[in-house]
Image (cartoon, rainbow, N blue to C red; front, side, top):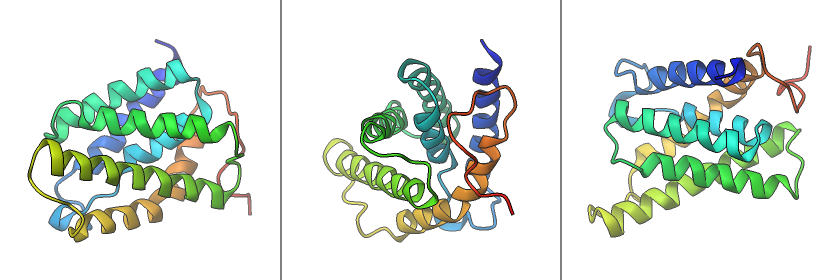
Length: 169
């Protein structure tokens, strides 16, 4: 495995541990920012289809093992978000701050729709539409997005296809 792949797997594992840590100050009532979704966006913007899909399958599987989510759910969410990013990347340039926030909102909405469908039709537990934590999770993800994305841009051993997320001061 090459250095960029290993560095992203290690970074993904660290983000996963932070995301699933039970003692986060904002982690009460199940509210946790989706740091892996930010990594999905970064990989979608900077990696090829095959390499990115393989990394995201592995990270989705790791997330399911650590969090106890049903098998295949987060692999589906992350791969579907990755595919949406790849399709939108053909038509849009995601080099600006606002467009990267927009793609995060699109991916969060995609995640919400997949979870809504799965909980309502497959798992038959009812709708998550009225659950406040999901919207708080999206808000926390939006708040942490610039910091995590900048951290991802600074990982050594990678080929940068894009400029840094935040402009230099």
